[in-house]
Length: 192
Image (cartoon, rainbow, N blue to C red):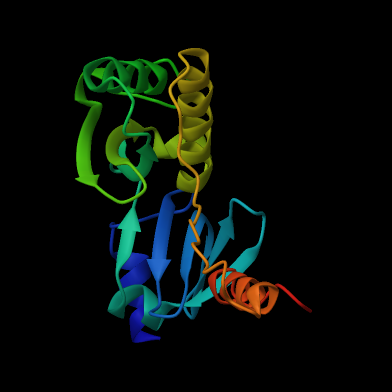
């Protein structure tokens, strides 16, 4: 009851606010639908009703999105080593800023993050409106779709995971060796 009183009298969040509650095992992202003396009801954007004990609301991290006009999201992806770098980075930035979910276009960042064995890993930051009712994962998906389309239009290749295998032609059990190597590299899917 003490937790409920704290939640009801505290003005950190109110009915209709969009929040994320992290109880240690799960994150619940949605709109506050009801606050009682014992629990708070969150309606997630998957339309699930989640009942969160008020003790969790005062002892675990709660992110409020209504206090923010925009929030920053980021992700990484890889482009091919043959890609023209300055042009590729600009194409990616233009694709992000051209997407309807993107906000604060002057703050969009596209940087080389790391050189890996697969290619050049790119890190992007962009901002979106958390009050739009869209999940951050959905916003990222829309941005990734726009990037994929723009890179394809400019013939910039995205690498895909692959392995090169060299076998000894003198091996009497060449097929067995090849199947063993394929099975190990593909996680045991061969030969089932």
